[in-house]
Every structure is written in structure tokens, then in C-alpha cells.
Image (tube, rainbow, N blue to C red; front, side, top):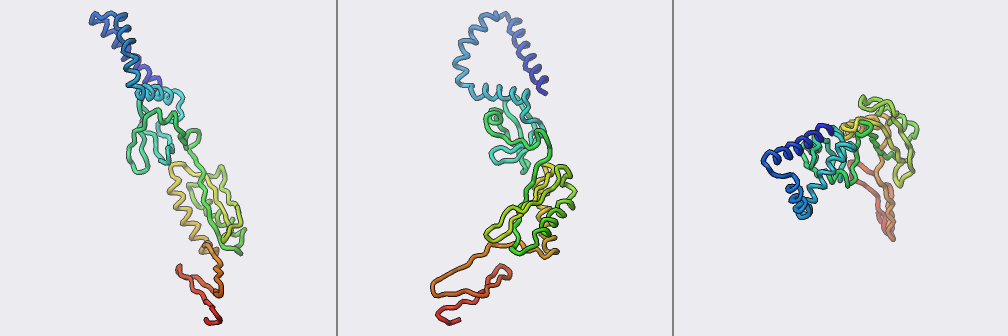
Length: 237
């Protein structure tokens, strides 16, 4: 692609020069005129020249290629076309976005598929204190192994990371095709919820102790998102 683009523009320039010669215009005089105008034109076309040079950089260095999945300023998109002035990408809403080549060269761009078309997917989950840690780890690993889109190498990994304020914090790390990260995340979430229910593992919610002067709260219970408690004040229930 890079060679084809360069040959195309070279032929265009050579053809233009021959056309000028055929019209009887001396190349030397034309060069002087172009040199005189180049300073003024240069100021007005800085952006275009910058994008042109950046396009050559993209074509030869290939930090991004057609078909790559990139992340730019929080937007995920697939490279559809790399032109000499701009690059066309298609985001997950199937909207085609035209990006000046200079932005791809000068800004930080995350290319998820430059060297490998796999990406790591991380899913965090917090369970209630008192849960069987080994059972939680094995259940998370079972969810990963049950999904056909999770690759075997690098192997899935379930980690017990932290003693949180209200939860025991775990993390499931798997490698999946980069283009399917959102879909696979949803599938794993559903599978984890299903298996936790089957194993009796409780996904914890934040808990707080409330202390007010002269007031005691005892026997609080939670059901369907509502908390019921017995409140004592001045020995009156």
C-alpha cells in the first residue's frame, strides 16, 4: 500500500512536469515562481502539509494498519482506510470518523491489535466476608474455562486481591479476542452471577454502622433492597 501510494504521487508529479514542458513553459521560470509563492502558501497550508507528511509516516512506519482496533481519546474504532491526508475509522456505533493523520502521529493512540489480536479482560468481583476463598477462586476459573472465546494461552487467572471495607475482593483475568471484549465481558458476568447463586456465594454490598447519640440500631436485615432495623431511643423501641 505504501509503495503504491508513493508511485501514484510520483507519476502525478512527473506527469505534471511533462505537461508544463509540453505547453512551452520553461521549468526554470516555473521553479522561481513556485519558490516565490511557496512561502506565502506554506503559511496557509501548514495543516495540509503536516497531515501529508504524517500520512507518509503512517504508511511507512505502520503504527496503525487497516483492520487494526485502536483507542483514541476514549473512542474505540477500527481502521478502515489510511489516506495521504486523513484516516477513516469506524467506531462501535458504525459511524465513520475522519481523523487527520497528524492526530494519529502526534497524539497517544492505543493499538490493541498491532502485535497481537488478543487483549486482556479484567473482571472484579467482591464477595461477603466469611465466604470460602478457595471455592470463589475455583468458581471464577470454571466460568473462564466454560467460555469458548477465552484463550488457553495465556491461561486464565483468578486472584484474591484485597480485604475491602465490606468485601473480599477478587479479580478474574482472561485473554480474549480484542474485538469481542465487550460481548465476552457480558457473558462472563452472567455466568459468574449464575454460578455464584448455585454455590451459595454472596456478592456483597457496602455495609455501614450508624452511631447516633442516644439511639441504638440493632437487628438490621436487608431484603429486596430495603433495610429493616430495630431502633431504640431512651429505652423506647
